[in-house]
Figure (spheres, rainbow, N blue to C red):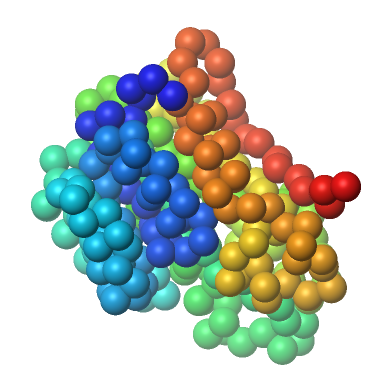
Length: 237
């Protein structure tokens, strides 16, 4: 991976989740400055303690279901840090419910976490990236960004929206040194993944392998351009 990540400031939302924690591990080993955002302050503190000898880890607890709280967190980060070089929008929530049972409150929660939060983080930091003429934004979607499945209409809709946002920003910033990526994995072996019904959990994608793949892909140099990658799973024989 050469020295692509060395001394770069990486912001990870959903840092205490299954994929987020694995990304943190790889980026610590590559000498990045880390800004970790998560809902549970206790878990953030525990994650920071895991890398106790690393002084370049900063934590921020935020409720992504509260729009004002999202903006307050972003403004606090902008005040405390000169720049963000790489943004990983990882935070997400799953919903399994028939459309007839979905409430407006559930709609707000799913779209606030899965779509609005990434949109606001992109909006607030992409301008800064453009100012410094460098930036990478990684939006973690899902195979549900392309497809629809019964009883998951709300989740699938939010992931379709995130993919649409990423594609639009890719076109908007195509003539700059800001690159945006959509990684669209199938089900992952995380706590959220366990909520998925009628699937074989043993075949789910290992979060450590996925994290390694992501950090390697975005460190590629030259004229290679990766817009979106759909990542499927299969049972190991």
